[in-house]
Length: 305
Image 1 (cartoon, rainbow, N blue to C red):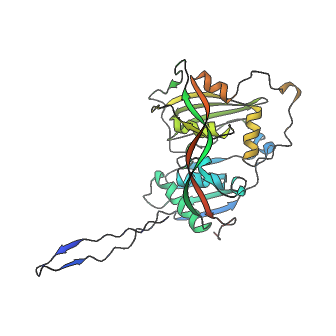
Image 2: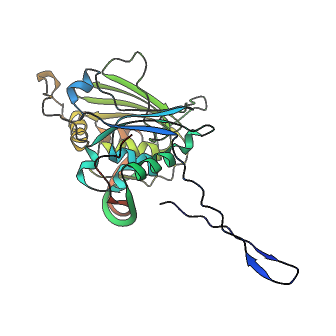
Image 3: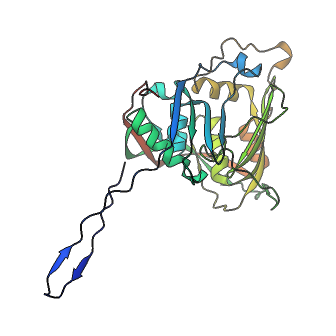
């Protein structure tokens, strides 16, 4: 994955001889100044709902902090791809890590993915190759009755948090255990949990960033077929069943979470599909070729800090 860049020039000399200039050394890959990697505890629904466990991404000018991210999520952030584009052993969705790293002097936050890539390659010996495969997907299209999705206002600015993870962010200050929020260059979210599922307010997001959220709660990857290029706001309701299915796929221990008698899902209740339809969009089942990153090598345990 490290491209060796050779530069050379042919120069005419007085005797009409030509020679190749000596190749310069390859540019050093972008890397953190120092980084610590520690295994994180498995996700627990009870601890998350009690506010004792958080999945966070925090990036500032001096350091980056990935809390409780799966290996798949780290690869996604490092290579700027979607989770569904990563093909590897099953454990990459359940093995979770805490990564704290210091940025080198003068580094920019948009260089964090390349630094994380170097870290994964050096400490986990990650090796990948590209592939393409036709897969069942949901195509996000504009509905027959026209678009109702709200376009974001210009003053909905975001900060630098979550830059590396494509929309992850900090837990909102003062938020209750049932509420979290985050913001970054890819937009902001506010998420609240209830007995019947989740409610998400997604703001100032491109369609591509919204797809990340939609794909978490559906049984197929979601690909953009809308042609929309702006930034939008979307209110997204996730049913309890959709939430639990997504949690199980992420390795969350959910068997201990019992449905309260009053929390039975009502027929026709809100869901991801219903929320999308309210915005004048539709999720259509299709089969499309997708570009994949296939894991060739990946150690379960990183080298020492």
